[in-house]
Length: 235
Image (cartoon, rainbow, N blue to C red; front, side, top):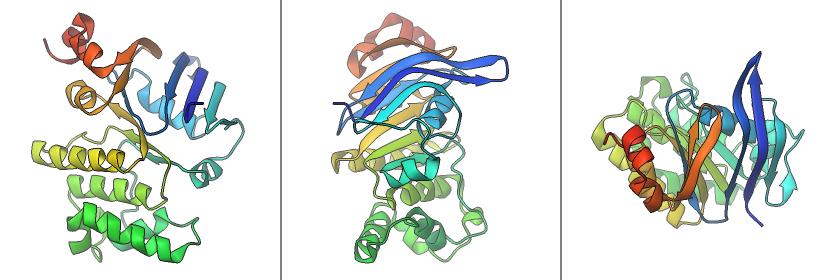
């Protein structure tokens, strides 16, 4: 049984079909990427999984259907989304943003341990814990968005364009942290326009074009595919 199973997912915006009956799976403990050009339907797919967009088809998580389940219930079940654009609370402090990630939890001792763990992953957040989040740099805001998601102690982490708009050194730091989180056992579905990074990091991948999955397989095979190399790797 796959941890995440998406079947015949369809998402419409008025008369525009953004996602065209796609299917994908993510096994427990995997890091899987979903790559494609801007506007391919990647972000819509993640929003459909967590119930932020009405959709047709079926999404199953840990064997149970998510159909009709509100987003906050999906989050409480162990699915965390780091959205494109980070989605932090700009008027709250770093510490308050992180506390919001654990809002549904009642295991306070474990929450404190997870907070220490997040500060260990991102020491800069510890240094800026009393700073208003809207005053952070783009890279620091991305750290905060990932840290906030980790505070929910997710079983499945959905990452939407974590490298977007960041300087190369910050991208390297973010991706090193994603690798560490994956090694700790969190299952990850990674959406990225930076196909080179995504395929390097993941074990398997899907290529999405115009709302449809056009290719899938081991990341090494996709990276060697002439179509992928020409369209996404700049070769």
